[in-house]
Image 1 (tube, rainbow, N blue to C red):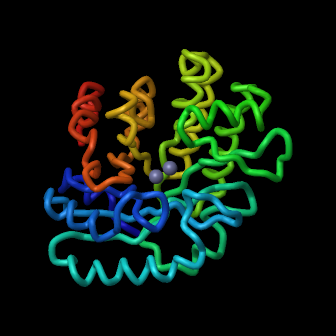
Image 2: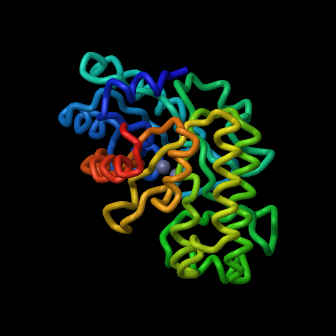
Length: 275
Ligand SMILES: [Zn+2]
Ligand SMILES: [Zn+2]
């Protein structure tokens, strides 16, 4: 197990959530490593979107896993003196049949595991999983096609999936645990301030803490959408539970590997959280 607490105590330049050519990242693993070394990063973890049992443009293909592991080993040999590299995946939780506890992931030499919800079951046909993590235009379209435009039910489904994922376990870090708030907030302005929404987030957060998971403060959307995951309105939970935290950029482009970190650190400091 990677000692994240020790790493974050000694370094402010790390990233444990990142994407590359093996999923929907926009550059090669090597380009990300070169950028990380140039910026003085001490630790960098690769988390391609995991293979899943149906085709998806964002997820790594099963057959590419050996090439991914081989490339990781090559880079560790080539750059290991300059930076600590880690092999991981952002594992999609799809329900009881697919997630971090699946034996497929046990067969891989992963250093740690990040797990996230990007898909929820369609309301039309529950055997079909729908990606609700994309941009808002695509989300809005899917709301009509698969979810009868019932945003509250979609939000509840997202957090229900998240709770099942947390209870199933098999991973170390939970990815962007209130990500649905972004698209839901565009669909229905102010939804994240509604009592039932806040209760869902609080309930999810308690489960995360009960299961000793690490929370990430994900800075991916800060530059374009002025928010982190979790949203700033929930930082009080981080303080209340003294939650173990990582600041991750979820970078898909090398130039964004450190995007939003300093602003997020300053913001967290105003809540008494010093990383
Ligand atoms: Zn994600
Ligand atoms: Zn990601």
